Structure formats: C-alpha cells, structure tokens
Length: 522
Image (cartoon, rainbow, N blue to C red):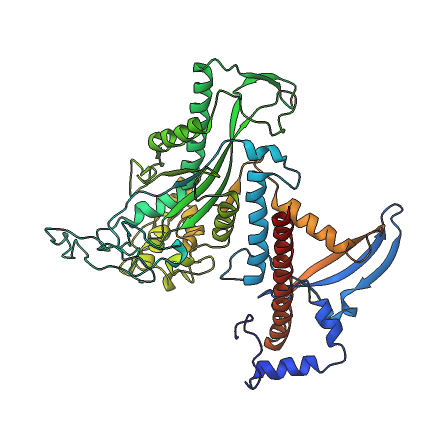
C-alpha cells in the first residue's frame, strides 16, 4: 500500500488514482468528504458501527437516532490517535500541539493554570545514561554557526588516541573519522563484543525507577535546606481528615524521554519549584522567599550524583545491576537574562520529542512475540539486534532452560511459589529496546492534562455550528476495522486534511503577524 501521505500527482496513472477518481465522481463525494473530515489525514482510522443518538440534555428525550448503516461507507471514522510520527503523521501533529500546551502552561500559565507560575523558579535539566562501552560519536568543540539546527561546524575526530591499539576482540580502540551528522555509524559501538548490551537493556527498563528516586531526593534536599534556614513546615489536613506537617516546598515536573542513537534513553525535565498552601493543597503558590532557583539547581545536581538503584537478583547477575545517571547532567535556567532558553523554545523542544520513540536508532517495530522475535533479535547481530536479544533473554521465565527454552512442571511450580520475575517486562518492551515508560509525563500539579485539552476540543467541535444547542451526542458503537477502504480514499482524505492544516497554519501566522503589528505600534 502506498503512503497515505502522498498527495495526488496529475498525470501519474495508478490503481490508487483510479480509485480516487471513481470516488470523486460519485454524487455522494461531498458528503463522504465531510463525513471523513474528523479522521482525514490519519494513516489507519478506526471504523465503528452502531447507533448515534442526539439526546436532550435536560429531559433525556431522544431527538435524533441514526445508525451508521445510513452513513457513507456504513461506518463512522475516528482518527487512531497514535502519538508516534512514524506511525501516523496527522495524529502525531495533533498530539504534538497538545504536548506543547501541556508544557507551556506549566511555565507561563493559562487554560486554568494561574499566570503566577511564570514567576516560580524553574530549571531545565537533562539526565543521560552512563557509558556501556565506547561508541562512535560526533563532537564539535567550538561552534561558529549561526544556528545549531543548521550546524555545519567541523567536528573533532571521533575517538582519537595517541597510542591506538585494539581491544581484546581485535577491534580498533580508536576512530579518527570526523563523522557527519547523518553518519549511520553514530551511536554504534566500536566493538560489539565489548559493549554491555545486557546492562543497557536493564538501564532502559529501570530508568523510570531511577528518576522517581531522584525526584524524591531533590525534595528531601530542599526540605532539609528549609529546616536549616528556619523555614517552618506547613500543617495541612489530608483527605482522610488527618493533620500532617509537610515541607513548605515541592517540585513539579514535566518530563520527556528521548532515545539516543546508541539506543539508551535520556530525559529532558522541566523542574518548577512550588510552595504549599495549607488551606488548598492543589493551589499553585510560589515557594517561600528563602528558597531560590540556585537552591533548586544545587538540589538537582546533588540528587543526580548520589542516587543509585540496585536491581533485583537475576540468574545472569545474582547481585543485580547498578543503575545510575551518566556524568553529563546538564542544568540550565529558563528565561534568564542573555540566555538562549525561553519558555516557548523549551516547550517546542519537548513537544517535538514527545512524538518520537526509537526512530533515532533506526529500529521501528510493533510489539514482538515469540513468532516475530527471530526477525529482530540476534546475539551475534548488529547493535540493535543484540540489544533486543538481551531484552528477550533477560525477560525469560525464571527456571527456564536457557539452551532449549523448555520448562518442567517443577520449574513452573517454583515460579509460582517465588516472587514474580522483576525482569519479565523486558520481553513486553523489547520492541522499545527495554524502555517501558511513557515518553511524556508530568507531575499532577504541573499543568493541564491531555484529557482536558481533548475534551475542550471535542466540546468546541460539537458547538461550533450552534453554541446554543441543549443536546448531547450518545453513541453505542463497536469496532469493525482499521484503515481506509482503499488507497484512493486515503489519498483524497489525506489531501483534504493537508489543505486544512495548511489553511490553519497560514491563519495562525496572520494572527501572529497582526498581534506583532499591534505591539509594534503601541
């Protein structure tokens, strides 16, 4: 099937074009195009069947009752909602816009978040994974370019060594190449046999727990600082009615995971310092005057350097693995005088990575099963094949014969009598190279939620034509399939969606230009 994002090109004859012309020639084409507008642009829309009723809000009286058999294609189309750009560009575009709003509102306020959060101390921190073996990398010691997006500066040699030898497997221990930004060797180990693929898979898997403990350590550090400076704890009443004393500061975060080329996860995190209102625990108030952004920055660095997670015992590693942050922990301030980072740039940066997954590594697949694992895993293969194999091997059932993969009745009973395998999830997330967390997460009080943004958008669409309606839509629908009925339908729907997106983009630019003119005139 050809790409559904490819627009129609006149003069190119194909089965898809014939299907599109046949659909466009039907008298019902305008109605079909309007019917599919909500899912236009989606790569694999969901098709639903059932009844749709308009119900009067106050009385519950059914005003209109319609079955999907009366609609074009006898189905209701709904966009798949996939956040990954490699899977569905249009749905990822919508998700990226929502992600931008979630991050931006936590920095500047809006959509129910008070504008006062813009005056809270905020830092932007990047936590990286440690080294699991030398890899090819690109390093520019001094930038002279106007913008990093189009950087053409000359990089330094990859891994220059004055006494270049070989590793124990006979591979060169040095690399004198000056890699281009698109060099496929970037992120690949110098020696595949020296590289610790098992440790990296485990690090990806337990990185979420490492982050959880790191944030706890930040808050403990700040609470201890408040005690030393004589800032009293706050007495609050919990939902259960109990009276507790809590620290006067708390850290709210918005976090995005990014998969590096070497297939190790690292985190970009916005950390905002909030105070505590004893009368309303959900209120967003500034921290006490005695705690500043300098203290927040120190707390981040101290926590990153001290926190270590020791994973549970594994047959391949009885004492577990050590999961720690890498040495490169970068902490920057937002909107500082003369600084490059602004709230808009950071929000756009995080929103961009929220639609990515493993694309940077070159691996894209759905969840792996015993029937498909051999297509991707190979203990003697390339870097990604070995990493996937490590996930699958470490996540095996405890007591399994590693040579044959067979289990006995006693083995299975032993597995039931003991604790669950803490590494079993590695098989579930082998297609994500061990990382099983969400790519965009936030603290509950940081900002608005995706659900609120989706509900607001749905409410607007329902009342766009008539904002005085007293009816609500109730659907009783079942899933009947995914995807467009033909390549021609995909071409027409996606072309119309592309035109609508371009129209909205031009409209936004015109509004922004008009606002700039008003500001310049003032």
